[in-house]
Amino acid sequence: MLDVNGTREAHLQAFQQAPALFSAPGRVNIIGEHTDYAEGFVMPAAIDFETIAAISPRTDGQVVIASQNFNETVTHSLQQLPEKARHHWSDYPLGVLWALREKGIDVPAFSLTLKGDVPLGAGLSSSASVEVATISALLSLTGKEIPLPEMAQLCRRAENVYVGASTGIMDQFIACCGKENHALLLDCRSLDYKLAPIPANIAIVISNTMVKHSHAGGEYNTRRAEVEEGTRILHAHRPEIKFLRDATVDDLAKWGSEMPPDVLKRTRHVITEDDRTVAAAAALEAGDLKTLGRLMYEAHASYRDDFEGSCPEADILVDLASKEAGVIGARLTGGGFGGCTVNLVEEAHATTFIENLRKGYHAATGISADIYRCHASDGVHRIAE
Ligand code: ADP
Ligand code: MG
Image (cartoon, rainbow, N blue to C red; front, top):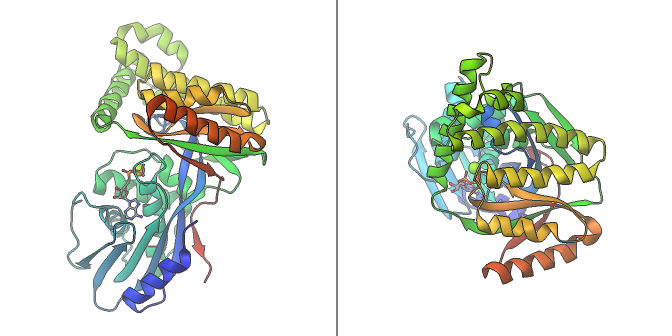
C-alpha cells in the first residue's frame, strides 16, 4: 500500500499548497495478448498497485512535475513546453498535457507530484497508471469532465504519439474503467466492455521473472510487422479483413500457405488468442474455472510457440505453477520476452503456492522472484481528503 499521506505531505512541503489527490491502478492481463492492436479482445483486471498524482494550481505560469520514485523534479514554462519526448520519465505526464491541449483543453499552471508502487517495466503498466492518474489530476484544474473511455484514448495518444511507444488501448482503458473484484472483457474496436466477477475464493498471484530480455523492443517491432504482413495477405483475399480481428481460423486454413512460416505463426497466435479470450470471458461469467484455466495454458503455449514472445524464465514459472495444487491457470502476461506471469489460484492454496513457486524458480534459475498476491481493483478515482 502506498503512503498517501506521505505524498500529500511531500507535495505540501515542496509547493506550500494542499493538493487534490488521484489514484490510477496498474493492471494484469488475464488473457488476450497482442490482440489489442489487431482490434480484438483482451481481458485484463486492474490491480492494487497504483500511481498517485497530487496536484495544486500555480500562479507563476510554470509546470512543475516531481516524481518521488525518481527523486527528481522538472520545471517548464507553460508557454514553452518541450514539443518532443526526451526519453525521460516526465515524457509521460507531459505527453498527457500535450494530448489535452491538442484536444483544445487548456490546463493552467500546476505543481504535480507522482508516486507509484506499480513495478516499473514489469508488464503491469506503470506507464498507463501514470498517464491516467495525471489526466484526472490535470482535468480537475480545468473544471472539465470527459468520459472515461475518452480519457483512456487521450492517454493512449500521449503514449503512442508523444512518448513514441506503440501500445494498444488496453492499459489505459483498464486503468480508467477497472472495477473491484472484476475482470473486464474489452472489445478494442468498439471499446464496448463487459465486467465479469472474479470469484471471492480466487487469488490473482503475479510472479515476476525479474528479467526483461534486451532484444524485447526490436522483437516487438518485428512481431508487429509480421502481424501486419499476415493481415495484408488475408485482406487480399477477403477485403473486409482490415485487422486480424476480422479473420477466422478458416481464413487461415485457406490462405495461410501463402505466408512465410513465421508470419503464419504470428497470425495464428492473434486469431486463436482472440477466440480464446472471448471464450475465457464466457467461462468466467459462467463460473467455469476449469475451462478458463485450460484457455490460459493454451494461451501461454500459443504465446511461446506461435508468437515466440515468451522466454525460458516465464516458461519455467508457468510449468512450475501448472504442477501446484489449487492452480486454475497460469500464463505469461504483458508484452513478452520477460516480465510477469499471472496465476489464478484458489485462496486456500495461495500461501503454499507462492512459497513453492519461489523455491522452485530459485532452484531452476538462481533468481529470486518477486511474487505479488493481488486483488482486482477499481479504476481511476479521486482520493478523499
Ligand atoms: P510498464 O508500463 O510495463 O511498467 P513502461 O516502460 O511502459 O513499463 O513504463 C515505465 C516508465 O513509466 C518508467 O520508465 C517511467 O518513465 C514511467 N513511470 C512509471 N511510474 C512512474 C512514476 N511513479 N514516476 C515517474 N515516472 C514513472
Ligand atoms: Mg507501459
